[in-house]
Amino acid sequence: QKEVEQDPGPLSVPEGAIVSLNCTYSNSAFQYFMWYRQYSRKGPELLMYTYSSGNKEDGRFTAQVDKSSKYISLFIRDSQPSDSATYLCAMNNAGNMLTFGGGTRLMVKP
Amino acid sequence: DAGVTQSPTHLIKTRGQHVTLRCSPISGHKSVSWYQQVLGQGPQFIFQYYEKEERGRGNFPDRFSARQFPNYSSELNVNALLLGDSALYLCASSSGGADTQYFGPGTRLTVL
Image (cartoon, rainbow over all chains, first blue to last red; front, side, top):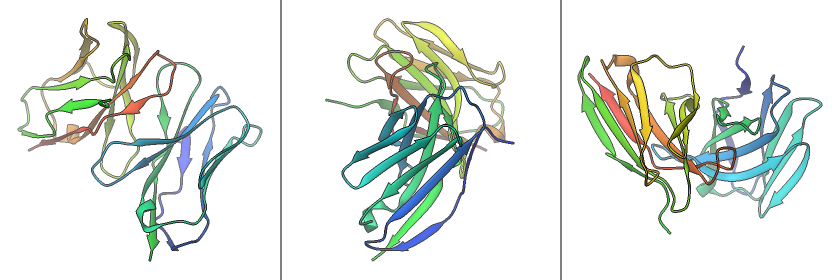
């Protein structure tokens, strides 16, 4: 079993929809949680960075962390075709290495 | 300000050859990490360097090595290339070892 599990998708939604992306993890030592967006053949771009449990909002993006359930989510409101990309969750325990999920491919159709 | 830069963008090698990939971190960042991303998967951690010292190593064979220079740039070396080494190699920089990591565009390596 992988340390971080993420549904690979693809997830296809109409423009304007609310998108929910999720990851589950098994290592209770993880404290820092990140979401990256990766366009095809490009490097990952940091979207959200959260510490411990709770919610964090930035524009159309909201990140949620539930450490008791070992479950994190990213919500995208008013989704746009330009949001079409692969979304990677990542986490670490204040150490060095990031542990990534496998990524969810999102397609937002006009 | 320039982000993380990597070179080359793309290269093709044959099995058994050696390759060197280069990374320049964001100005002021002292830590560099390397990741391998196979097509369709998430990145896998290879190495982290901070202030020229190795701070972490992932589950990769000894064919993989890296170093960091006094200007904080870094090289990743892979010897005796295998077909399975074909991947996008990503470099990430952070101001400190445990801080947020920012990724470069990657180097796409194809091994024939």
